[in-house]
Length: 64
Image (cartoon, rainbow, N blue to C red; front, top):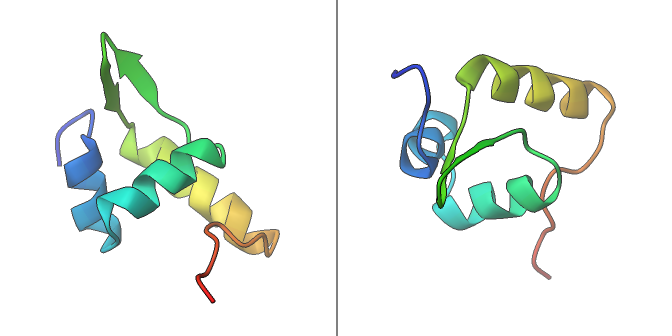
């Protein structure tokens, strides 16, 4: 995995769709904006997801 992951890299790593990544960004997923592009430090993303799951916060909305 590269030092900074793209949305595509992150969606493959987490085994979710790219639209789920976009929803997580809106919910507070840490990212870095490089020009118009978004990049992610994988270790920060893992810490964020661990913290959210330990707090039992639903990370993405479920469709009815």
